[in-house]
Image (cartoon, rainbow, N blue to C red; front, side, top):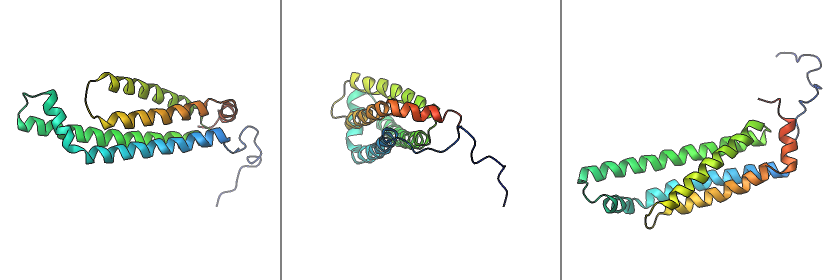
Length: 165
């Protein structure tokens, strides 16, 4: 067992503080965003039949093997995107609760990227796309979390943690 350096316990500026309610709520919303992303994967897998018909409708000249390949790529992208998105939600929730200022900024950047993605999804002309519903639900959760992360008490909490990496 190692001894602690003398005076390390009472170093100014490093006292651990509890996250304010706004940061805690934002973290719980981020966990909910991860759950919505994982639920989106499940729904994508359940509605596989519609994916094949959407591919054929968009590109009627494709051969059967090309449609199958496109379907597999679509499924793979949906699963990978959902898992990566859920992991990012959880990472940002944990980092924000820990008071890491970079996490609040990166969460805002991710929200900006998600905003562009949602806008692009509504610009496409497709019918019966359940991905839009989950994308919009995730965007609304992200909006609420970002609003909470940028409140005054949240800012004070992140300012105290600027020295933490």
